[in-house]
Image (cartoon, rainbow, N blue to C red; front, side):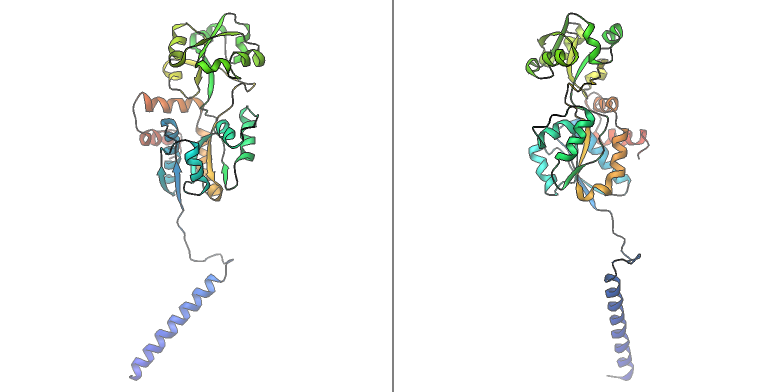
Length: 301
């Protein structure tokens, strides 16, 4: 080998050794403030139930995280809890919009909490290791008692308790409501409200609007509350099990996404969730468009 080639080979070898040594030094100093690594945010896998309202919330989470620079994968319409809770526990799914009361009963069937704060506190204790919940929203999807706006104005009603002074009330709802703890017996025991019961089932809201019943059990996020101009009565004593919208998340990434998702929860109201559901069921808008507009309207995009 010529002298020139020898010098070049030696120089290249020296450069390689030096680079290797520097790399070794960098990796051996975990406290170094500048490792040279700029890792991209992890991909967040978001799931949803097979339910339009739940999918809208999941899409809001997804777009909010994408706006914050996260990579997001959507796994919507998974099904019910028996199907998707294992996916959260094994890390296949990272984030899921849930409901506090129903989720608490899933993890702890013996739980007795009913009011929003008590349910949320119990849920934080009940979630299994590896999962956690972020901030709950004011928005709910649960049983609720409703009256028409005219009936509420006539009797100055805001709370279930206000019904106690009204005689001749007829309560409508699914047939099983008659035996539920929050049915006629619960109304009497908790609020001193006396009612007769009419099993109205799928016609409950129609019967309420027609004046054939005065009180109706309607899910609190039902679009009919808005489209039929109903008033949902407050439940200060926790007759119904509170089921506030809450993000269920893999504990390993909770801190990473908390600021983004908690901001969504803070902005989501009961009336706002109903309006989102109206956009889906009445206006027939896509979850993507609904979420995009909602985030913009709330200054979160």
